[in-house]
Length: 295
Image (cartoon, rainbow, N blue to C red):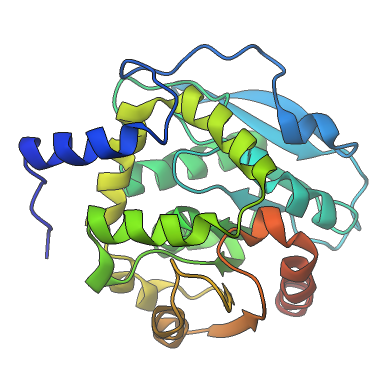
């Protein structure tokens, strides 16, 4: 069932409440000096690339280490209003073992900004177009949070591009698809994020702008990933941090159970943003899974 579009009055109420969390942009992305990439500047194994994929220029971080010949490429899929920058810690952990690619979706990070925000299917289409352009064959996809919704849509419609998938902290359970509940959950999760995550997020929020961020957030609430899970044939690992207030235990179990070839892994003592806060723990469960199903 299609969710009703939020009223203009309600949108403005929530937008006003959320604005304090974003750098003020007047509704547009703020200019950010090129090269101001906190995390990738710290990485010795990633380089920035720009690729014209269809109508848009897409930025991605790509590992430069030689990968084992039999290893699949691994594509990291970022979450809402962010870019691939906060996924660099996980990319660094994976890079010695795989060819790692971390794209920024259109409208986010250093990729080209379309005039309108893209919904989940259009973001999945953009990912498929970019992968085909850069010559990335069947890949292992690893996403965090809203990135998992994109992977679900992508894997259901582009099965030939998916070797396997890792859904880390997938969003959002049907009974919590409201602005109020998600702001509460984000606030509950913020205590688990270190200050450096705030710096990375602040730059990314400025790049996308509050209007695009909130419009994409509304698209995320309208999306119904549970209706697509049965169509995913690729082996899929659902990963939940035991303290994750955004992806709760019952929802992680429901997602894993609905996947034809799914399983669930719980990591103790961690929360939602494992790609940044606990990359070693995330990779410790993801690598054996990827290797087992792709080699």
